[in-house]
Length: 264
Image (cartoon, rainbow, N blue to C red; front, side, top):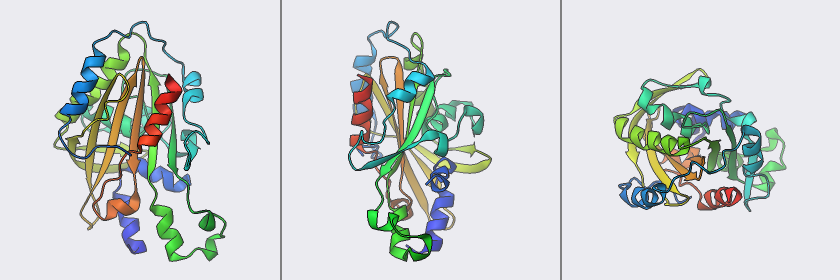
């Protein structure tokens, strides 16, 4: 892919992903979500009103940290992601939980939220070079990395279940796409598709969004939402190179497993 193509791809990727450029899976496969949803719904029937609700400070400590996932680099969400819901707007109220989940923000009603980004470690050789010594291949490889926005949010009572339901309902309500504004940048998502959830945690929901690229077709990006007790985890994965050739990056199972393990 030529550099100009990468630029068009980056501009077309959900504006939520662009923050990673300046700050620097088993995911949805586009199939029906019945398998993942059914598995989650059985677990979701048990009440979680007695489950511990964490504060934002506690969630920060529960987030994945450097060294928790071998082969991955962890960067604080303070440097790469929107800091509050006021930074992310959807043009349809029903679609807001989807936009929040993609931005590492709480999809439900809570102020207890924490986020970071997890990506494959870049080439050590390229990382050791000065900018003027970087080759075209080095630049290409820098974009050819799966980057996952990880968000944690915690709720009182049945708030966590309601948050997951809001995402599930949003997938159906927003199938025709919706507009999103993040940190002042506008983006049109042309399609929302239910995905095959992993079935992990107490319940899980997955979805894909399509975004029209500037003269370069359509790119697809995957998100999964997994609830563990009163805590909701969200995962949104992008890869600028694979997006440019029409391939959606999968949400790394290793990242999801490692994050859920810290919540047990």
